[in-house]
Image (cartoon, rainbow, N blue to C red; front, side, top):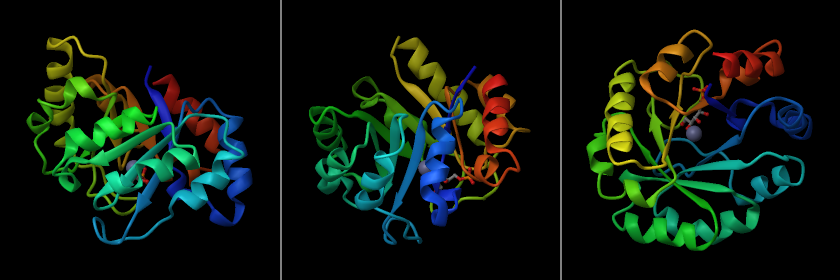
Length: 215
Ligand code: DX5
Ligand code: ZN
């Protein structure tokens, strides 16, 4: 059974409070929050101010995914806003070890995200320092895209690295996760399913979360 983290990006922002309450009243494990700066990715979403509001309602751990340049500059702000996990992109961080250390020193779980073209082997020398790897299964920037099938190979490679070294690192899969492809993703070795459109655009989001959790 995988953990399920619905992505707020696909929620109705006119009803943010009730969307957050929906998450509280579901079997979702975490809430995933996508922060985009219009520079690292070609889209702008929301920042710490919105997360601070969301945090007043949401009772589940907040898994914050920073798709921004120089994310280390903002670690303290996202901590103050209530982030429990802070994930930064390997492609955005020439001083990745330093940024990860800062996130952990602030008391958050530290995650590293990798874009679809980035080999998981590049994580080798940071893997023992982190709690989460976010394997992007679409090019980051937008919800509602199609799952890139090669991600399944990357999950298997990464899982092997984690198991061989006896590490305690969770693999989360982000982008294009559906009720149909979730089994193959879990079978490949994923621990956390992030699902935006599949959950929030469903007729019954709570039931859809249940369905993903039961796979
Ligand atoms: C994409 C984001 C994802 C996105 C997933 O850049 O990182 O978290 O919200 O959305 P779906 O599940 O709709 O592909
Ligand atoms: Zn994300």
